[in-house]
Length: 393
Image (cartoon, rainbow, N blue to C red):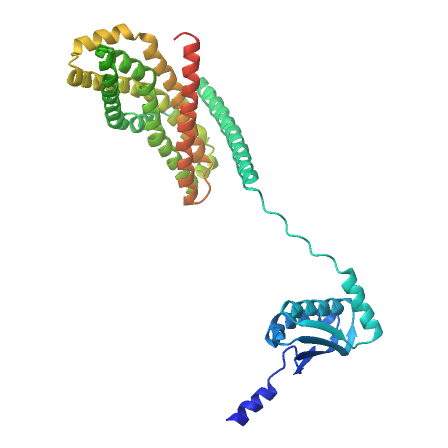
């Protein structure tokens, strides 16, 4: 068995065979380089250095000698590989020397060692603050670009709508009625419930503070102004952005995904006229009506809570409400509802039409349409608050 194992060891290919032979003795390791160390063999030599050199155990020897006497050919590439081999052996902790070779080979090694380019220092990583500023810049540019595209789409919708006014027969009554029923009537339960509860909460929280000053009757002023001017329209718009705006994106996006929009174009139909205008007109009609409905439900909730918590009856509540509010408070909510309806519908339809041909894109654009619509509604609401205060409303 030992003899057979010894025969297999004797016939095992030596590490770096063909390019060097190794022998040990007296604390040193001698690597006798052989063959052609030139460009033609560069790949094989480099692979031998990477694969076989670590197995030689150069770290166990005090000295490592690279003997060049057996090198038949050495060019610049081969000299570079000899220097690389020397560096790898030295990194293992051994003292490496180069011996032998012709004067020309040694001169070439000296030249390569002297003229080797310095290692390029690694590029410094991005500073955290710089990366943060870069992210803000990229997000800003993306928002501006998206807003520009959205504004262009809104202009296209307005132009299509103006052309439709000249030809009223092209307005699709059936899809319009269907969208009004979906966006308006079916939203009444959730809009009414939330408005009723918010009106009650406003009175409940306001009464705690007004009782300290003996001004409980002023809860009518509080709930009347807050619901008519802000809460009624804002809550309704947010609900419709999440409910109808997302539905518009999902419906139109699914049609894009199934190539139904392409089929409409093939038949000579304008997708904006067929899909977008009925939805926008439906919200322009239903959101003001839902705002009025939300105002009524919010005031009812406030009236009920005022009666239960403060003992203010219905007559006292309505009399004080009539003195504290006027038609302008009601008109502000209705005026804002028209603009909010246009924003929600346009954003929802726009994201539906730009959906890519995959299901993941539909979900992504549906989420984006809700977020953008709510954001734009709140920004416009802030603008309206300043504007109406400035003109004295």
